[in-house]
Image (cartoon, rainbow, N blue to C red):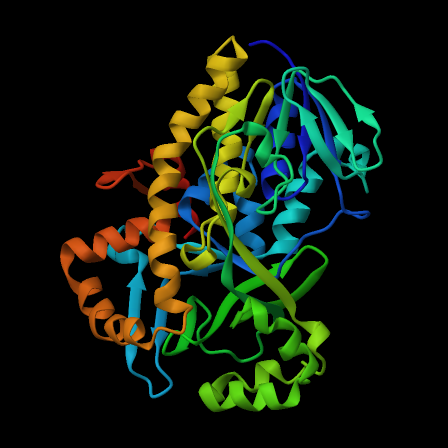
Length: 408
């Protein structure tokens, strides 16, 4: 395997995993991060078996399980208690589960595993790349490089995506969300992601996400769906009236939200939908949300980032030439990603939109579909990250499955 001089732009999950994997393979890795200080962005997420398998490959499975919370069921209902969704991993495989984690926990685990984290070039925003020569240019006009390979892992709002010359779609979603971490307290659903819907106009979620290395208080990740155009209006209206609205929709979560006293305690999250005809050009290749941003309705962002990192490492191992390696990487990942982008686009208005008729159809049909043998398994494969193409299945490593079963 040829050892390369590699630049990684962005130190989110994709950038972190790539830095760790490629450094372990002997490549010379340099990382550029636009934020002035390294740290996680976001509250919590649900790591699926596909993402857990990558952590297992990295030797981080036990650490992740020690901090995260095993999630065995996803349940959604209306304010009157009518079930809309009820998905249990055990219906797909008794040994499978999701893992609710705090962003800070995964960030710390990946950062601590990579000795080079102290050399990350913080506060350097890369504005462009010369894809044929491997030179980077930052916003101040300084040049960095050249590099044998430049990996753009700079997120959903990637500045480097355009350099592929192959962008099919790059547009913001009209809806976003407010996120925060709250103490778990006596929350009774310790192994469930719980959601409550008012048509598709309002959606509340509570996900157990465990602890992080610097904080042993178990927490929940709370989210509230909101049109992106309403963020400023929500912020200006203050928090008390909004908390009363939330408590009216879901009285049981009022104790967990007691510590929220100002809008600044909730982070705003916007989404993008980005699709490319080609993920690479010359010495440039994209990974994570930079390559395939999508709505978080399927909860696959972190899983996709981890899987991209592992696939790119394997492609560089398998192919001597760079062009062949990047083509192999795209082929391996594209068939998997495409089906998730498809379902993400279709499902987003089902849960976040002003179309009440869509929500009524969801409330009538979603639960019965999930009880049919074929429908249940298909939905659970999509949830667990193991759907591959329209009808295919992404096989998990038997050794990983054995490790997961013993730790389940």
